Image 1 (cartoon, rainbow, N blue to C red):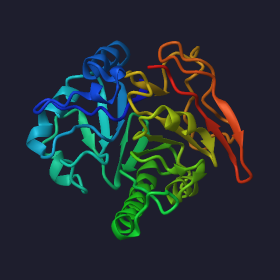
Image 2: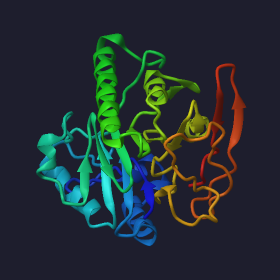
Image 3: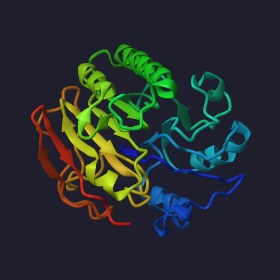
Image 4: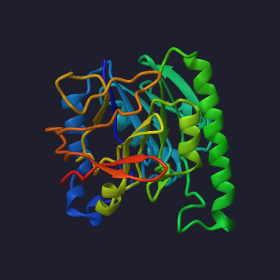
Length: 285
């Protein structure tokens, strides 16, 4: 059993939205994701989706995209992203429409495949240069509250014996420094945080990855991953990109080495006065 992750699928079955307007590397991205997914993921694996699932505005238009995901191997756990307008803030009404292999989260948690997965979308924070208190403050406060609720639920399910994986769509760092989202993850003893949202090479180069304050961070935007799911736990122990999860991960753990499948470069290390940050070089398109 293996745990995988990929975010920002940006599917658009009902009203096609060609993604190659954002760069030639997006050409036929859905087909490429499906091909890599089927080659890597087994039926009993877990795949974690950190938001921006579908361009649809309403649930009926999103359902073909969800059925497309459901037809791929594995159990899938997802959160909403900033473009998932069809995905309600609280996912209970959504769940009755979902295919059996998909679990929707939003301010809550689920125990599956030997881990507890929790999550919420996240948002811009006051540290971000584009933060507008008039429009962003309310959403920011609400998302912090949803993360608190999700972490509390995760701890009830984990009972101190299962590692907790947190899904956020927005990265929980600004200029390499932890936001209130990251501070909550550390305080809660989360093992791994998976996030997406970043699509520019300069943002990939600055993305915080590896261990910070006891939490292992991974950027999982699909274009960063060259449109193939990335390992979170399991797989071949000969792969240097694979790190076992633990309920109390070591402070020095980082994602390192070269992943031949995804073309990752060696991670580099930046030193800051408050903590050390691991910054991954971008994968080639």
